[in-house]
Image (tube, rainbow, N blue to C red; front, side, top):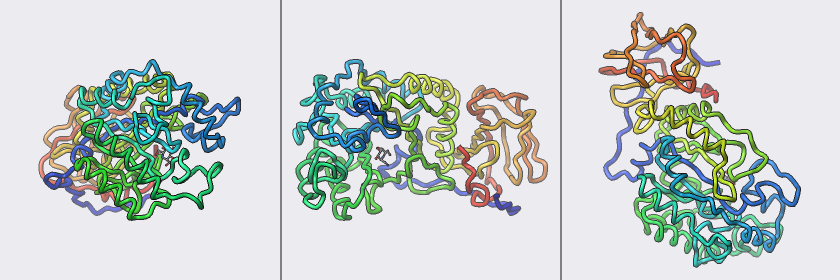
Length: 435
Ligand code: FHN
């Protein structure tokens, strides 16, 4: 149960950006699309009739598939329906400002043309196209930042990397050799052949020594000084913080950060998983991440034919409708200056607070306790309709339409002058994210 604090505090100030801060675009982006796509989308959690549940991109390890058998899957990967521009436009319409796609996941397969390993989409599949290059072109055309996920430590195709303990003896592994001969050359290809990148999304650092994590960060920055690295490069390094999978922040985090969720219960496509989060749940995840100062990276898992699951397309289109009317409360916003409440939470811009009502108040009367604010106007963000309000002592009462104008999230915009004084965020936020 939350502690009630009667003391009113001036809640936070707007985070200042250092000049030439390479994280600025990331801080302002707020919403990104994660894409886990690889040859694991062919079995899609069905390995010769045996059904797996959960992370479909892990099929190689979970079914202990031999190198020969796994290489044969590449021979069946022919996503002729892939249309980079379609994905980029869908992401853009949903308000996503960046896309991060798996260039090489733990299975070791490169979804790009690589001279450093023949186990790549151009050399090893009938598709013969480089989807990352097509995505880079489409992202540039539509003003979307592009980032590449790269599994730096686990590579189940390489005896010298981590992870494949069913075919190789980990004691004989020479991790330095793998770094020199595959990981760093492939990063060089990614950072040289696809234009300016927003970020490299490292993952599962495992036991990587600190000097190797540092080497990777330095390598990325030497090739593209403005390219960010994720904290999962390991050992406390990286330009921004990735929270754990499916972890929502409950308190303001000053460092640039990203919460990450997948649309259902797998990152790569699984033919058995229909447990998709609803558009409302996704908007809620987005807003709660934003209200603590960070971004949401939402994952979709395309199929082996190059199309996105219909559920992902439909839900992103629903979010796009909401975003059309409410994006002002998202992009470029900062963490909330208010605590979380039973009805939802807030995002902020200078002199503006955006209240996101996920649980609509009964009869349309919204009461915010313990707040002092010099209001200039209160309105619904979607249609700019003014709302009546009253400051009754320390309580602010806002009179809304009787029923929720937006079933996903009704956004109320407060315009104010001076400082906002409210109940301590510390006291109210713990455990209230409630998604
Ligand atoms: O093992 C991976 C998993 O397959 C997926 O890529 C997620 C995304 O954050 N990262 C690892 C687990 O944390």
